[in-house]
Image (cartoon, rainbow, N blue to C red; front, side, top):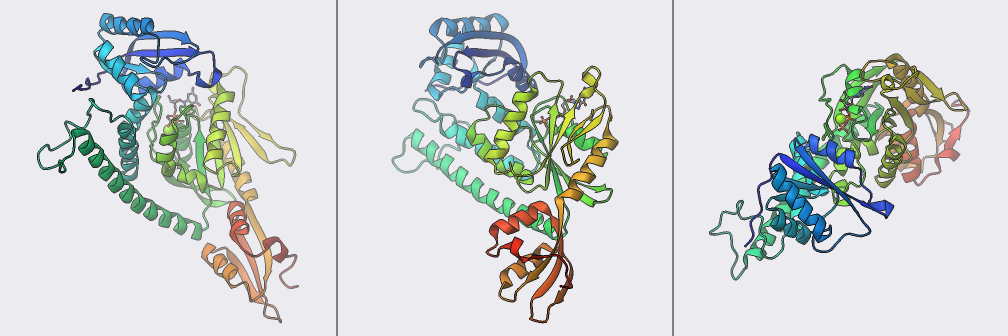
Length: 432
Ligand SMILES: Nc1nc2c(ncn2[C@@H]2O[C@H](COP(=O)(O)OP(=O)(O)OP(=O)(O)O)[C@@H](O)[C@H]2O)c(=O)[nH]1
Ligand SMILES: [Mg+2]
């Protein structure tokens, strides 16, 4: 039997460069992640390899170096900036005589510390259980402490089988609870659509300044700190915009490079607000050297969660750190705002942001006159449900004449899912 070491707060970070670009990780980001997890990086071991080694991920010489560094710095945890296989983790722990975490484990730890809502906590637990279940291998039981011991074991089961069975049951029960919470949330969302309130979602790379901007906009007191993933659960606020009226603003969890796919799936619900938004405020830390990569990374994830079609307004944030950059709005050839240069923290350019938001959202609303024949009963029902009808009357032949006003995104969704050809139903004038 091999028991795991308890993880502590003094960490040795390990960062290996690969010649292959796709496995390149950023050491600075690992340091930020470690800080976010409340860990103190006492030393860093770096190296380069052409490919991971089976036994220790690194070569045995490098593994010895890590173990020596742990001893010299009296660290109690080693954090790898990569994914380790369960057996690599175990081999390293035996060699270093302390807890070894990989990147996924570290991110999960941060998620666990930050989960605040019921749904967020369930999601984190689910992701953790799934992570553990891939690591349940013979001779390495993790569930020892959580188990009640007597009475839990099934007939003829080995310890490993009991662990697996308990894990599966726990995962199932969490998934069921999650479905229930998500359904409740979905109902809340429908109520919002009925109220015809457009939704804005703040998205962006972690540490870009989303929560700070959220505060600046709402004047509310949402947690903004120099820590990654400071926000785990979407935080919603109602704001008032000139010429548009009320809107819902949603803060979201930050995106991060190489987020293990399992985690993306587990946290999908925290990004629900993103998927259903009418406008995305893509916040970018323009003072960060890697801002281009970060933008690409965020757009890639947005693509993965089917949010790439939603209109974006880019917020070029932290201009207070850049020389000679003043707050301004960039516009496209139609005069529509595409970028707002500002500093959320210093409150520079806030009025410009509000101006751009109003313009984008006013643009994002569609107003159409429709002539709907009686046989399109389903469409009629959909329009009623969207609560978007501002005027209605009937033509002599029984056609229904309506004027609708709704977010462009809703119109598109309707057009996509409706059997009727909506564009063909548009008429110039309701009296026609
Ligand atoms: N100099 C400067 N710092 C800023 C600005 N906006 C935010 N920050 C700082 O950047 C750090 C991260 O800000 P957050 O608002 O927590 O970032 P976030 O995007 O919400 O991060 P996650 O929730 O972790 O994804 C904090 O230390 C902020 O004070 C800005 O305009 N200028
Ligand atoms: Mg945040």
